Image 1: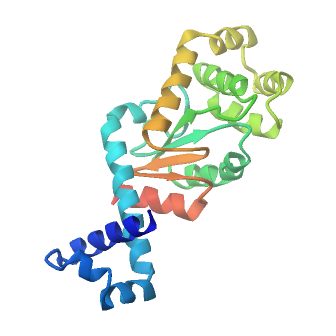
Image 2: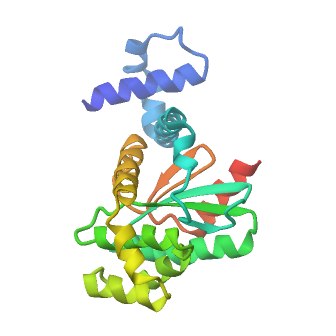
Image 3: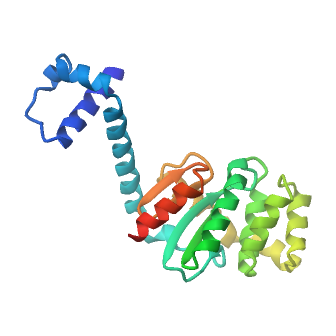
Length: 229
């Protein structure tokens, strides 16, 4: 398997360099192989480029559906010209760690629209995700999103306390959280995440580039700026 991957990367390297006429068998045995082994960053760069290309192809196949938010479930400017997607889970410590980065990006750029995708993959997260979508339907998604992280693990009591703390109409919120519309949104988000090849939260999309993990403010800003260029 390792030799197969090496040969495939060799093909990509020399395909990019315009040396397709060279013998792959020869490449595996001569000075070129030694050179690449001595300079593994070339293979890493090609592997990364291939991964990024595949991610962009998956993103292109999804189309505009990814960028259509559930009613009210947006951070920043709902009409903003710059768009970033975030898949999140309230029991995910890396999502909580990324909260300040996203808040900073929104505060610094009045044109930034962050479409939030509730993706409850941790045990006990679904109730909080449902209430977050219900809060969006009352125009208070941001408030609930921030409060839920402050209230800690997503016990039913914590979810209720977070919702009450931001002044939700609780009877309506409970009904909305249990609604078919919210159920369908959670299924849609799961499908979108899988289509993009995401394996966990947080996960982001800016422009034509998906990225997974708590990558930090600088990386997210770079993605947004590149998408705008």
